Image (spheres, rainbow, N blue to C red):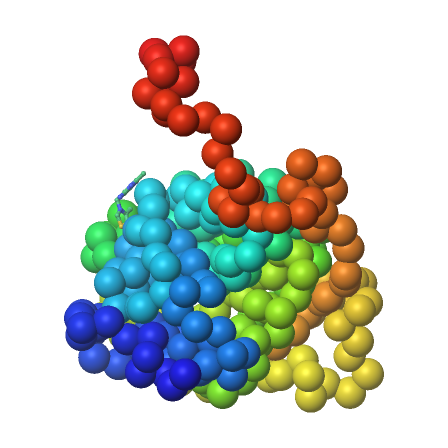
Length: 285
Ligand SMILES: Cc1ncc(C[n+]2csc(CCOP(=O)(O)OP(=O)(O)O)c2C)c(N)n1
Ligand code: SF4
């Protein structure tokens, strides 16, 4: 497979320079290097500029509802455990409308990879404040500055038991590709929160903003991604310096491995006992 084998006939409609391009390239290259084919992979998208990737990506795709990409993906994985299931959603989608699903899916350690396009805004709807926007940020929806402090996806994920917690940057596509590969290979819930500059609406968190501040945890002397206390300390760092890379990883039972009814063949590959689905549906009408 080559990266272009994961392209559809549609040309991406993202603004020139958008961080979504770097993420798209990194994901396609990760799939190629993992030896995956389009038919091995389901990508569930949320709604937003990020969600429009559903039109530009040739795997199985599901363009779900805003905030509902995670339960959709968990359901798909339970039905067909042979698929690699990846979610790609906006930060507004995942940490706003979808926040409850986020915490509970990672507590359960469903075997899926969750990639967030974190541009610190609601971008498709033209730049309103998102849960990840910083306190004081002025947007169309917060003209006098945001009152709330921002949600911290790394700290939230660590405290709720996520077994793979990482942060990438759309401006470092090679590093992001490696993170995606590790996350997809990880058995359990893997989070890759990606700084994805929105060049049209976010004039603060630009590519330069991140180039000036980011340091790689993989290069930090003495950093161990098996130590949750070190990980939490780094998760709370935000300012002139900002960490990215693999914060924390720990192997534990996946949600599916604890369900006896899922052992053996994938559910979708077993013979169907119900022949007439309409009769069954009537019971719930
Ligand atoms: C339940 C629901 N609420 C609101 C909307 C309207 N809406 C569509 S896209 C969007 C913003 C998306 O922002 P984000 O999830 O951060 O993705 P981005 O566009 O930044 O990639 C909103 C609020 C919707 N489609 N569904
Ligand atoms: S509005 Fe922002 S996030 Fe959306 S495509 Fe344009 S640059 Fe990208």
